[in-house]
Amino acid sequence: MLLITPSIDLNSATAAARILNEMRMIKSSQELQLARHAGEIAVSEVALASQKAALDALRPGVTAESIHAEYPEVIQGAGYEYPFRCGRATGFSFLEAPQLVTGDKTIIQPGMVLAVDGSVSVDKFRAQIGDSFIITDDGWEPLTHHTKSVDELVL
Image (cartoon, rainbow, N blue to C red; front, side, top):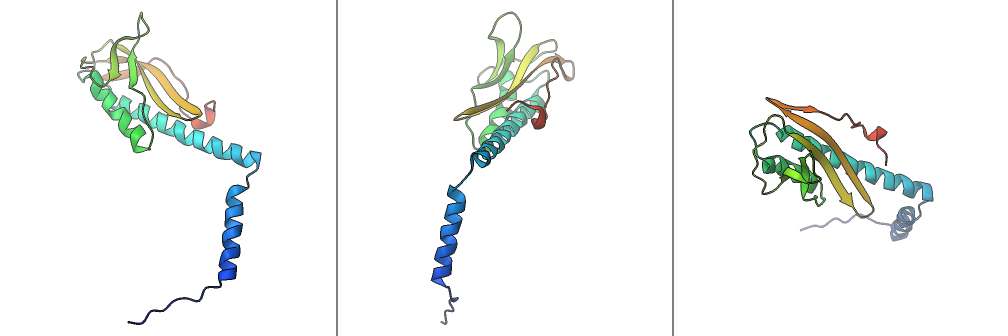
């Protein structure tokens, strides 16, 4: 068996490795801020996608937990841990039933008003997108109209 190995100039390879390492370690404060901002945008986009997944499942006749089931798949699929619920009923108290969480078998019915969130937390940043919806006979209608454009969000 004949092995052919390419000729490598070790001095050039070592010099290139040093330059690449320096490029990775030296960042201006502006470069660091841009990198942080890019990470925040990515987290915000996952939060928005998790809310959309819950809304795609939201309709009368399904259980509260089945709506929640769609939410963590998006968040965990992106490599993050998810909060324990993606929403709750709104009314007279802070934590009114049903809650959109694993274990809540409440059947969603027309006339219910629910807050549906998308949320992702990382070490020093949390993105949460929340809106309220009224359940209709064949789906839902938004009661709040917040921006969904990452360009318009406060980061």
